[in-house]
Length: 571
Image (cartoon, rainbow, N blue to C red; front, side):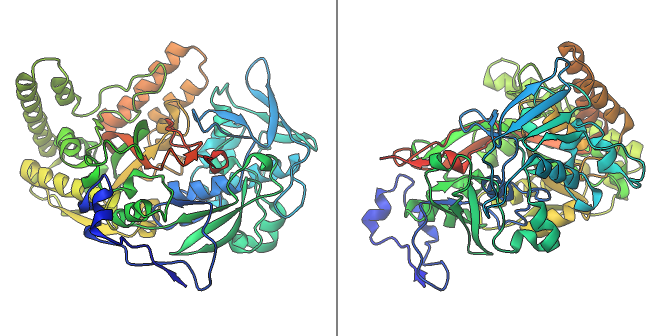
């Protein structure tokens, strides 16, 4: 069956607040399978096709949205503020030294297939997640757990002490931490820490997540996954809070085209666009007054990664030189267009009690924000940029590439698609390409790839430079800084620095707030001002689309979390 979603008249086009420009490419039809099916109660556009919905190995944000609906941990995220609230654990206690948590599970927990969920399931799940052969990029979250880092990085497990989690009773679990970790309840809501079905995984191996019926612990169960069509979720009647889950059927649609996503939304075929990359950037200004398109700040950073294991990028002077000549204000003024702030550091504003230290090129941003009148600001900014270019050229001379001579051509990789964020990635690449050529004489080729290739090549370090981004999982600097420790699966730069790792480890063991902040700032300064394995470009502002007159339970949060169990249709 093919269901058609079309605009019936020019009057209908004119009635939309974004104007006729939205419909330069009209959606003629949408494939929904080979048999008639009822429309879902709630339809979300979820961005690029997911790579995996296994909560222990997924990496993409869209993948995580699906997994968060299917699986749950001790805690879950409050939809209003993103903080941890009780999930499968109805309560927990913290020891006086804040290094031991005792979680009390609800006694009525069941997998969607009917088997009980017990403390032993959590113990097995966490022990499975830390195994190197599991390949969990987010296994670094377990570094906070007693002996977690040893397990994640082990090459020989013969004499390792046990991971710091054990069952006290069938419904009580004790977790030991390496150090006091105030945000540990938020970590417990993350996908990689969710409980997974041991009996199903041992029976079906790597195909467990694609073998029906998948046992689920979350508010929803997987009805089917049709690549390039949709993932259909159905309410899990055995979920502990099923009586408060309002949406019976939820569809999550994949798609790279932002134009298509907006057309689907405006014609009523999609209820929620969760990702600003699925909204055409050229429409941001036109959508500013439409209450269905909500802008909000959140903890996110858009940056560029270097592969520090390749050629000239092994030299931090080269990396810093490239960082110094990028005009970040030009990028946000010309391309991103959601009021983003150019970034010097990695950690965004909004983290309580923390300010990012100055990174490479901060002098230019300081000049622009000097408080003088716009003409003087612009003059000071251009003067600072010129000084940065001079320093960058000196660094290239020191590295053996005067005026770029002898520097090999290299590629900049980004995920391509049908507009929105994918189009923006390309535009940023074009601008940076021009800056590096004109200021340093470097030749950078653009390498657009599809989403799965982008993820795979980034993980395998099969790139020269690559676009990157990170959205904070909790409101603490470590959610960003931990990503670039040597053993963290999300590093994906090849960069290893013992001093950086040491500062973060010392900060983790430090209870004094001021001392901890100073250690974290020292580590971040090393990352963005001295060694520069990444170039922060700007801090995120988000945009999502839904009709607040129709739906309740969707809120802007700093962590950009919008749990499906909280969403309901207004009367």
